[in-house]
Image 1 (tube, rainbow, N blue to C red):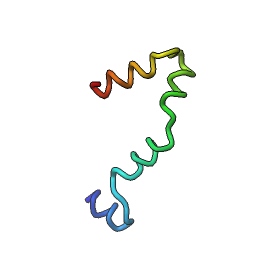
Image 2: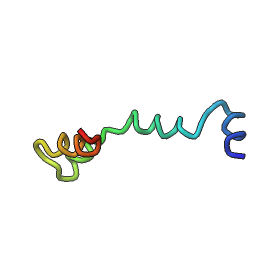
Image 3: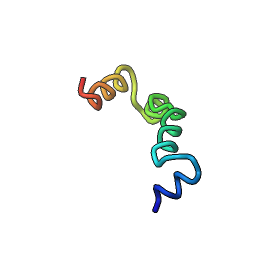
Image 4: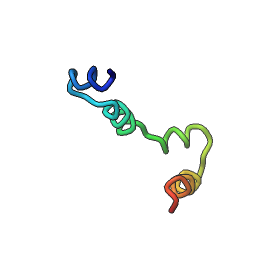
Length: 50
């Protein structure tokens, strides 16, 4: 049902999520809320498993 609705509009469920993530500056948001120095890079590495 949702798939048909989105297909009629030429989009997917993933499209708005990808669009939002493309515009979101996560590091700036984290720094504005208290992360400093190398903390954002360390968090990124931890989340990506690297």
